Length: 189
Image 1 (cartoon, helix red, strand yellow):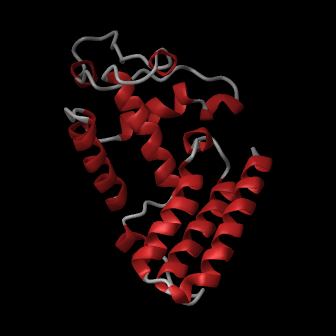
Image 2 (spheres, rainbow, N blue to C red):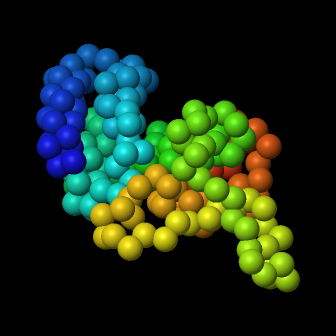
């Protein structure tokens, strides 16, 4: 995993260096489009596989996203990136990973995902019908994991993220409304 992150950082750094060299010749909107095409697309590609990744590797990727935002706005390195990311409507890397994983879960529950993903998740069924959790049909069962390494698997980490969402988001009727509510939730949390 670390070698993948190192390779990813190297290719993104190369793109950032090239864009920063021509930044003074292009406007902010064009720079933003270039960053989305050359940087964010690489950060987002297969990022749901990084769900169990350690925080130091996520921090490395977050630094690259912060650098991209600073290049767009032409601000100094010491400038805070939180307002920059918010004005660009970019979720931080950790939330981007959660967003994609939760989107796969939503699509799996609504028969819009491949069967290999749908087979990884199951609806929670309570053994005790009187409990409040038994009435919630949007909760997912979290398989028991006795190994330290398997906690980042889609079948374990995905349902944990899903069950932590408010039920109003879990019960959205369409993909577009789910994405909108989820992004708002991740920005505000």
